[in-house]
Length: 132
Image 1 (spheres, rainbow, N blue to C red):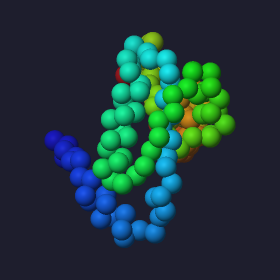
Image 2 (cartoon, rainbow, N blue to C red):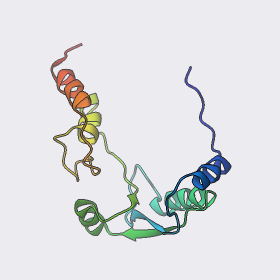
Image 3 (tube, rainbow, N blue to C red):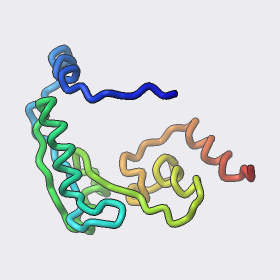
Image 4 (cartoon, rainbow, N blue to C red):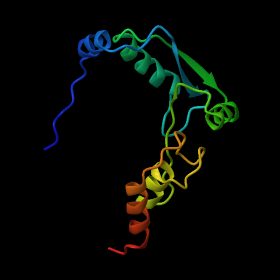
Protein backbone atom coordinates (compact mmCIF):
# COMPACT_ATOMS: atom_id res chain seq x y z
CA UNK A 1 0.00 0.00 0.00
CA UNK A 2 1.31 3.45 -0.94
CA UNK A 3 2.22 5.83 1.83
CA UNK A 4 -0.36 8.58 2.13
CA UNK A 5 1.03 12.08 1.67
CA UNK A 6 0.05 14.80 4.09
CA UNK A 7 -0.36 18.49 3.44
CA UNK A 8 2.12 20.15 5.81
CA UNK A 9 2.59 23.85 5.03
CA UNK A 10 4.62 24.43 8.21
CA UNK A 11 7.20 21.93 6.97
CA UNK A 12 7.49 23.91 3.74
CA UNK A 13 7.93 27.14 5.69
CA UNK A 14 10.72 25.53 7.75
CA UNK A 15 12.49 24.23 4.64
CA UNK A 16 12.22 27.64 2.98
CA UNK A 17 14.17 29.14 5.89
CA UNK A 18 17.00 26.67 5.27
CA UNK A 19 17.43 27.24 1.53
CA UNK A 20 18.67 30.33 -0.25
CA UNK A 21 15.86 31.02 -2.71
CA UNK A 22 14.07 34.33 -3.20
CA UNK A 23 10.36 33.67 -2.75
CA UNK A 24 9.38 37.34 -2.76
CA UNK A 25 8.31 37.20 -6.39
CA UNK A 26 4.65 36.54 -7.07
CA UNK A 27 4.11 33.63 -9.42
CA UNK A 28 1.42 33.60 -12.08
CA UNK A 29 -1.06 30.76 -12.34
CA UNK A 30 -2.33 30.79 -15.91
CA UNK A 31 -5.77 29.36 -16.53
CA UNK A 32 -8.09 29.13 -19.45
CA UNK A 33 -11.01 31.50 -19.28
CA UNK A 34 -13.00 28.82 -21.13
CA UNK A 35 -14.09 25.98 -18.86
CA UNK A 36 -14.23 22.42 -20.20
CA UNK A 37 -15.99 19.20 -19.35
CA UNK A 38 -12.86 17.94 -17.56
CA UNK A 39 -12.58 21.15 -15.50
CA UNK A 40 -15.85 22.96 -15.06
CA UNK A 41 -14.25 25.90 -13.27
CA UNK A 42 -10.56 26.61 -13.93
CA UNK A 43 -10.79 29.79 -11.84
CA UNK A 44 -11.98 27.90 -8.74
CA UNK A 45 -9.23 25.31 -9.18
CA UNK A 46 -6.64 28.10 -9.40
CA UNK A 47 -8.08 29.72 -6.26
CA UNK A 48 -7.68 26.45 -4.34
CA UNK A 49 -4.04 26.20 -5.45
CA UNK A 50 -3.51 29.86 -4.60
CA UNK A 51 -4.83 29.25 -1.08
CA UNK A 52 -2.41 26.34 -0.57
CA UNK A 53 0.50 28.43 -1.89
CA UNK A 54 -0.35 31.30 0.43
CA UNK A 55 -0.21 28.90 3.39
CA UNK A 56 3.47 28.47 2.55
CA UNK A 57 4.00 32.23 2.09
CA UNK A 58 4.19 32.02 -1.70
CA UNK A 59 2.35 34.86 -3.38
CA UNK A 60 0.52 34.14 -6.60
CA UNK A 61 -1.79 35.82 -9.04
CA UNK A 62 -4.36 34.13 -11.25
CA UNK A 63 -4.35 35.07 -14.93
CA UNK A 64 -7.32 33.81 -16.95
CA UNK A 65 -6.77 33.88 -20.70
CA UNK A 66 -8.74 32.83 -23.76
CA UNK A 67 -7.49 29.48 -25.10
CA UNK A 68 -5.57 30.99 -28.05
CA UNK A 69 -3.65 33.42 -25.82
CA UNK A 70 -3.01 30.71 -23.22
CA UNK A 71 -1.58 28.39 -25.88
CA UNK A 72 0.65 31.20 -27.16
CA UNK A 73 2.06 31.80 -23.65
CA UNK A 74 2.67 28.06 -23.21
CA UNK A 75 4.34 27.74 -26.62
CA UNK A 76 6.64 30.67 -25.82
CA UNK A 77 7.41 29.31 -22.35
CA UNK A 78 6.28 32.58 -20.78
CA UNK A 79 4.59 31.24 -17.66
CA UNK A 80 5.37 30.18 -14.12
CA UNK A 81 2.68 27.53 -13.94
CA UNK A 82 -0.62 26.82 -15.63
CA UNK A 83 -3.66 24.61 -15.30
CA UNK A 84 -4.43 22.13 -17.99
CA UNK A 85 -6.24 18.88 -18.52
CA UNK A 86 -6.37 16.03 -20.95
CA UNK A 87 -9.15 14.57 -23.04
CA UNK A 88 -8.57 10.87 -23.63
CA UNK A 89 -10.50 10.25 -26.80
CA UNK A 90 -9.10 6.73 -27.26
CA UNK A 91 -8.94 4.19 -24.46
CA UNK A 92 -5.26 3.48 -25.09
CA UNK A 93 -2.44 3.94 -22.55
CA UNK A 94 -0.18 5.22 -25.33
CA UNK A 95 -2.66 8.04 -25.90
CA UNK A 96 -2.17 9.13 -22.28
CA UNK A 97 1.57 8.77 -21.67
CA UNK A 98 3.09 9.60 -25.05
CA UNK A 99 1.75 13.19 -25.32
CA UNK A 100 2.85 13.96 -21.76
CA UNK A 101 6.16 12.14 -21.48
CA UNK A 102 7.59 11.47 -24.94
CA UNK A 103 10.68 13.29 -26.14
CA UNK A 104 8.89 13.60 -29.49
CA UNK A 105 5.77 15.26 -28.07
CA UNK A 106 5.25 18.92 -28.83
CA UNK A 107 4.52 21.68 -26.39
CA UNK A 108 0.85 21.95 -27.25
CA UNK A 109 0.43 18.16 -27.40
CA UNK A 110 1.02 17.98 -23.65
CA UNK A 111 4.77 18.09 -23.03
CA UNK A 112 4.85 21.81 -22.34
CA UNK A 113 7.86 21.47 -20.05
CA UNK A 114 9.75 19.90 -22.97
CA UNK A 115 10.97 17.25 -20.55
CA UNK A 116 12.73 14.29 -22.11
CA UNK A 117 13.96 11.17 -20.34
CA UNK A 118 15.75 8.56 -22.42
CA UNK A 119 14.67 5.64 -20.20
CA UNK A 120 11.05 6.76 -20.31
CA UNK A 121 11.23 7.21 -24.08
CA UNK A 122 12.63 3.69 -24.46
CA UNK A 123 9.74 2.31 -22.38
CA UNK A 124 7.18 4.25 -24.43
CA UNK A 125 8.69 2.94 -27.67
CA UNK A 126 8.74 -0.65 -26.39
CA UNK A 127 5.15 -0.38 -25.17
CA UNK A 128 4.02 0.84 -28.58
CA UNK A 129 4.80 -2.54 -30.15
CA UNK A 130 3.73 -4.70 -27.20
CA UNK A 131 0.48 -6.55 -27.83
CA UNK A 132 -0.08 -7.91 -24.30
